[in-house]
Length: 94
Image (cartoon, rainbow, N blue to C red; front, side, top):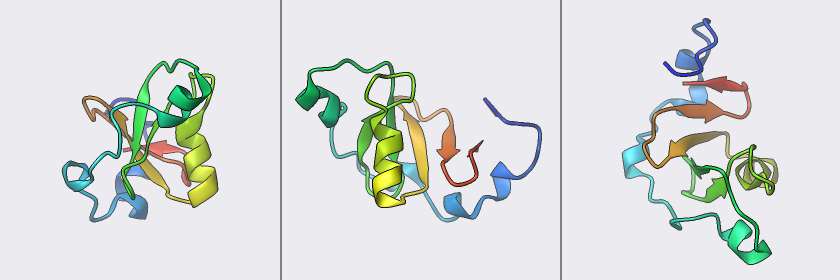
């Protein structure tokens, strides 16, 4: 899997257990925080708990990570193609 560290830790991560990203509805089509701030994003991430869409860590706003820090929601998926998932708690891909 893209970004897989070579260990099996991410595939066993309990934060992905029972999550079907196709059943999580994204709350916006873009990063609302970037739109409010008037900044651009590089890529988007969707929270697998609540559907919040935020910009990636390569973006100025770091809004996906800030969402995790504020809410504790541990897992996200890359948008738009959902090619990979990330656990903020374990800092690992799935």
